[in-house]
Length: 140
Image 1: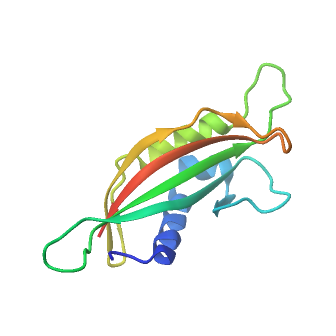
Image 2: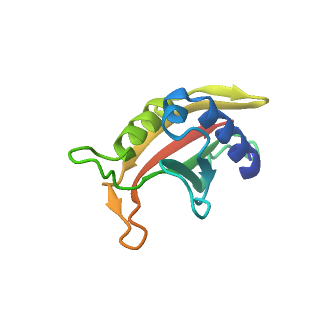
């Protein structure tokens, strides 16, 4: 295994915090898995969907493909003719992480690939709009 999920989450939170395109929109409102109650919007959440090791012939793989889902959230904008920040946050996340490479300590983020998105949806109970993006992080 290339990295523990806890370490991956910590490092990804650091990368999100360093991505000014994202923090210009959400400030420090980015979280693992779910939003806190009574959250201020817009906000970003992420979760690890799965981890697939790359098969090797010499033992345990030290290269993993980690699938991550980012969720962009915002409330409806009440100003006539304007939209909420979901699309802008989607653009910022995609720009920050599509083809992303970096190192964090002993872990190498070889490359990240954008794998798709969902259309904007609205939760009818909370009125919160959301867009989901999927990425593959190739790490060693």
